[in-house]
Structure formats: C-alpha cells, structure tokens
Length: 261
Image (cartoon, rainbow, N blue to C red; front, side):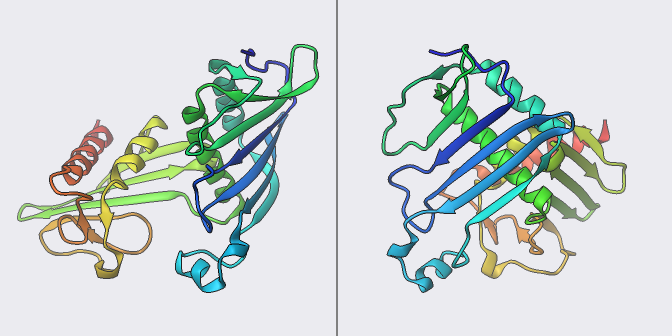
C-alpha cells in the first residue's frame, strides 16, 4: 500500500468504463489537475470507445451525437481542490491493479516519497468514482455545456399548493432548497447525492409528461427538462411494491421542513 500524495502539484486521473460496457456507452477520459492559488487548473479529454462497430443510426437512437468526444481546459473552484485533497488523504493506494471485467478502471498518477511519478489505484474505488462523476458535472457547468441541476416539487390539494425547489450548482458545490416564496436556504452538499440518488430511482414516462405547469390536485415533479411528471401517472415505480415514490415524497417533504427552519 502507498500513502496518499501530500506534496503533489499535478495529479493525473485516468478512467475507463468496464470491459462489459458496450458501445456507444463505453468511454475513456484523462483528467489532469494542477493546483493553483485560485483552485484547480484542469485539462479534460473524454473519448468514446469502439463506436466504429456501430452505424450512425444506432448511435443516434441511443441519444448520442455522432461525435461526442470532448476536450476542455480551464479552472475549477478552490472548493474542488479542497474536496480532492480530503478524498486523497482518506484513501490508500495500490501500485498494481487487478480488476474484474465488471469494474471500472481508475488510475492515479502522482509523485511518490522520492518525488518520482508513479501509477496507483485507490482501494476505495466506488467513493473515488462518485467524486469523479461530480467533478465531471462541474466541468460541464463551467464549460457551459450543462446547467445546474434544478428540481421542483408541487403538492396540490384542496387546501392549496406547496412548492419545494432544489438547486445544485456543481461548479461551486452549492446546494439550496426553497419552499414557496420563502428565501432559499443553503444546505450541506451531501443533500445533492441524496436527492439525485432517490429521485432518479423512479421511472419517468417522458412521452406522456406535460409541459403545462400543473393546476389540478396531485403531486408533481419537474427536474429541469421543461416537463412535469405526475406521481403514479408519468412518474412511476421501477418495480411493483418498490416504494420509491413514497421515498421521494418523504425526502422532498423533509427538505421543505429544512427550508422552513
């Protein structure tokens, strides 16, 4: 085992989807992160793999562009540098990697105790992979390819309407919740994972969703795509008796209570 890097200036991360991930979903990227006084100077190079095995129609049918490769250079907020250093410090690293074909590949290149660059592999790969997903989303926001995540929940009954809104800005690791017309309240970033991990367990029936803001009794959810999904109608359980809709409602009610405190 190798200790976490403590005197690094530049860190390179290499990621590749598992061997069983088929095209057009399989991809590889490198992430070069350099510490600066203002945060992380970032070089990001993302490439899809083995797409020459597919015709263009098959790629388009899966919702991709023909050429989805992407490269970007720019700066990320200092909050990402702090989070990266915390993650590096809590992990340990192996100098060799034996992964299963079902596992994604994560390699880190950083200086060892002698100051020489070496390749290492985090022992807690799952935690590292989730961090990489978040930092990729931050890159896309800073680059202008994607907008911050917004969610709105409307609960309408005979007594009136309660609106709960959530905003997650990955570029700044900022999460806030708002109830009705009250001022937004900042909450710990961990709520982002809780909200996204719970809400997207449900099935969204996009073809039947409405673009009209709901006015009738019911419970409705919008996730920033311009569509409104009604609980039990166009927002449904992924499997019988899964209880996902109850979990979503409970979580969003809890957030509404947090906003009111």
